[in-house]
Image 1 (cartoon, one colour):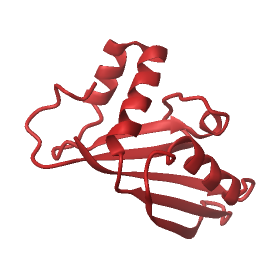
Image 2 (cartoon, rainbow, N blue to C red; image 1 turned 45 degrees about the vertical axis):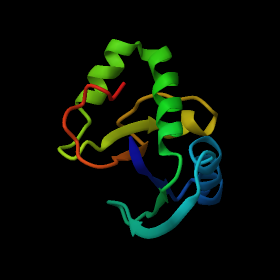
Image 3 (cartoon, one colour; image 1 turned 180 degrees about the vertical axis):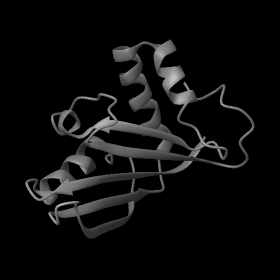
Length: 134
């Protein structure tokens, strides 16, 4: 169903980017082969240093997607999660999720729009509808 997935997150000056990177690999990347890592240095509004961490994986995307959706459906319920996912699918069928960064680093999954880890699952082939998202 999914050919690859991307993980991206911002690491602020007060955060240890190595620790955050290891957290992402441990909790989200253990199923797959890491294909590419990007660390992009940038600045915040007040000139504070920020590092954007981008990870790209190309194998076993379905396994991670299934685990994340299963865990989130136990927390939010299937209907609420389906509604969230339906609102976060693009025209190509890619699914976008945002997870709470702090909770993820402690092994928990929680949907969050603030200070989040962004996951993008890219669909294989042509996308016809989103009935099989959950």
